Every structure is written in C-alpha cells, then in structure tokens.
Image (cartoon, rainbow, N blue to C red; front, side):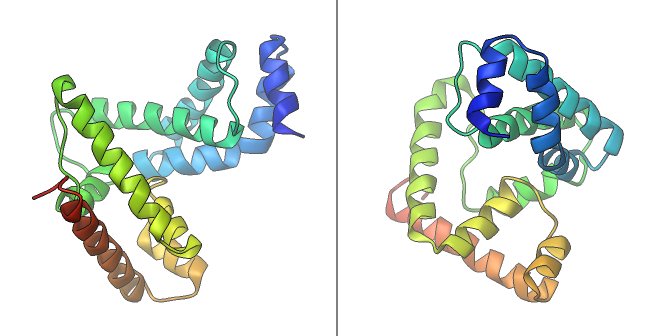
Length: 185
C-alpha cells in the first residue's frame, strides 16, 4: 500500500486509512513506543492513540513521509505517557537515554529558550549529516527510537561492549561539534 493512498484516505475520512496504517506501520510504532515505555499494554495504548491523532490531524496535515509522521506521533505520545508515569520517581527506558545524552546536549526546560532549542536541533541535524549512513542510523535507532544496545548489537553482529564504545565515540563527536558551534560550552 502506497503512503500517498493512505494519506488520501485520511483526507477523505475513510476508516480504511487506520487499518492500512496499522497493517503497514503498526509494528514499527509498537517498537518505538515499547522502547520508551518498556510496557506492552502502555505501548499498545499509545499506538491506538496514534491512529486517533493521525485521524484528527489529517487534514490539515499532509505528511511527505507517513512513516516518520506516525513514528513522531507515537514517540511524543509515549514520552508524554512516560513523563506521567515517572513524574514523581526516576525510571529506566527514556531516563537512561536522556542521561547518556545529557553530557553533550544542553537541557532546554523553558518556553523562553525555544529559540535556543531550535539552534541545538539545527546543530544536531548538521552533525548528523556529517556521519555515514550506518552511523546516522545507529545514532537515531538508539537515541530517537530508543532501541536497547543489546538488541542493536545483535542486529549488527557485534558485541554490546563494542557497540557501547561506538555510541560513546558518537556522543563525544556530537559534543565536540556542538562545542565548535558554540551551542555547548
């Protein structure tokens, strides 16, 4: 099924858009959500909420990449659910990812610093463009999709320790790039 057809169905308010989205992108959305929440029932609920959010946002949205659009929705819903769950206590999952990136990406907690957050995002995007496709995919799979190091290593045919070292070097490279651009001091 072509993404353009699925988006057209959303625009035409045809329920088969949801069925087609589930069939084509359900597994990847579940994976993204589960990697953040570490709970299958919560991940399933976020995926179902994703179809509802997509239904409510198309139109007016007409995404160029339906996969990226749906993954962004499910990721944001999952992070919101994670924050609700762990607002009073610390947990694994997303907390571990944030801690790994904390030393090289400055936190931007307030709305007043939104411009600075956009600058950080643009700097990270520029840095990502300097990486090989394999390194970029590795970084995004770990820090955007939240895949576990052990799972990534198994998929890449290397040891978890070796992969952890590669990720550490990538984070160091990111930090140096951000320092060079004056984003972090």
